Length: 484
Image (tube, helix red, strand yellow):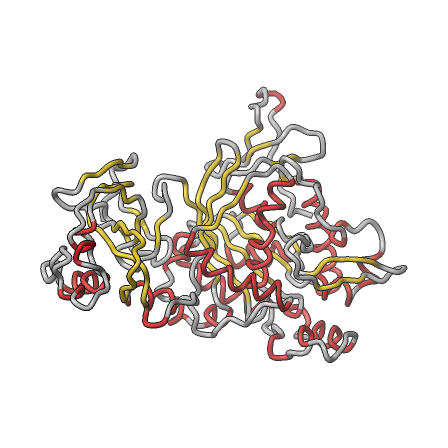
């Protein structure tokens, strides 16, 4: 591959600028097995027969390149319908680049519905939409030129990874906007993948289990906050896959990840007994609490061993680990007396505490609450345990989330109610995302309310940079909130 080769965010293969595809929507449906088979394999609903309303174009002699990016990749071309390529011809080109004709005279159009006038259409027009030549997934504008960061999500079976992603992207737009923290937009392929899950969640209040053999399409989103702009790619690693080296052998996402989200189910601490206590105290007719097969019973040590082994080969690239204790509603209710005593930040919701910047003092209190509980109740020092598996140099944050919202409490009782409406703010759901953005240097942070924001510099390992830059004698020492 050349130095400027782009890497497809979905299939992970390199894309040379001469191979990039352009596409446009047409009235007729054509069978595109490359696109359909890839998307179906990765959990996306596709039309029957892999039929799509699209035709493709290649950059070749005679095609006018309207604009290029800074690396010389074409961003927009000018061509006519007569030069369009049927998906079936692209399949042939994968076997033999000289085995097909780029024109509409190709055999694959003999049974098409396009009229003779449309076939002869020579009207030049701009075509700005691009696709990967290997999987035919859409490539968003400016992909390859904007900074791109990769995040791998690990968790045991039924640990809450998919539920977290669904809830995060169900509400992230409103929460970021309300807190002046920028905006996030899903790429079209990721929107098509997540939207049915979000709709199911809003209708039924729960997510559907992920198929054991599902590769899961990466979630690609574009983050923008003032002059800061980047693509963020989340790889949701199926829980069953983390223990299957054959499943993971060709997972190209892990090889590029700088940050890990470790989704830890509280049942990992106690062999499933939290789940048993929860079901005993709730309406047994409620399907949300009645599916014992969805309980995560894998031990914490086993999970961390598996994740550590999978990432060992790429340990030099992994700089940040965000440990997220999921299903906090289950934990808080099961241990209500413990969390109800004293000033416990974890039981409150986020509100607008991170307005304008990530508030490290708030996250520090959440981290201390969780670490104190884990050490006292389960003799677990989470940060040290993670660094044993991923190295002492990684930055570790310990947080907690729930897809339920605290609604009321009597005395020491902490009550949660599972809600599914899009306007609800799930319990601390955005904070892992905020920390990842902060680690990547895309989101400002402050140590205490009222203090000027600081900026995490991913290229620096010894200190953070303030905005504006401080005078040398006042430059603060680097601190991180997960100590405690």
